[in-house]
Length: 106
Length: 229
Image 1 (cartoon, helix red, strand yellow):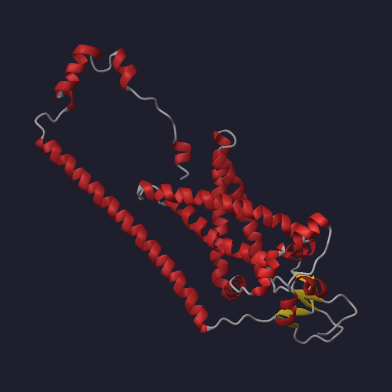
Image 2: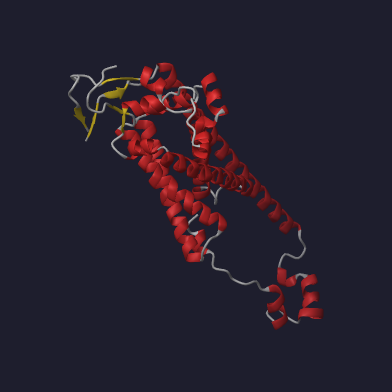
């Protein structure tokens, strides 16, 4: 409970001000939503184009399986022995890092 | 204006404004502190994880308070915007002498400053920064919270940069605000108390506001004080 003798005069909002605030708010939201959807649509389009190009390359390729890749087979034969050999494990296998905790938050 | 034998008081900050200020304290302050912790990676993984949770809860309080206050107290928001965007020669004079604060703090001298309305020129600058930076921080923060999986990397990269830069700016700015708020003890008591201030003190700090923007409480006899919630 507070006791006081003077109070601020009531703030009168004119129609022009009300419409101005409403308009600016709507314009900001609309622009934001437009930019966001535009970015997402572009991203989806690029992913689809990239996928299509990969399928096209795959379709054109003579050898389509990695275990039949002649360069890889040559590498194993002359250098790393065989897939999952100790040297292959050491050179080609990556380490696992658990990022689920912070990743789950974002 | 009427003069009373008892201390005459004016309601400077209404209940919705004080509640909104409390929400900013409970929302923005934890978010700012944990923001610095997340940026500088202070502590181990568990602590950083906790800081991130507090940061998000703070952001929810901050954003909700802004939306609710804007919708329910649009007139107060508009009054605030009118004040922060109203500039004249007095503001220039006020800024040139730093509102008299350096002289008061470092030389112990009280000099005459141009008369101010409800908020002074420094508070106007703070208000403008708060308005724009707050909105940018909220928008970029929620983009980082919700749109990482569906947004392009470059967009997220810049959202993160903007959030960081404005976060540091606002984080440092708010500590200046806290310092000056405590330095002006009367103002501090008004905001954290019942919202009222002695009229003489208001006349000293905000003469233009007292002159033009306040009125006696209705149905009040000269020597009777009203009790209002």
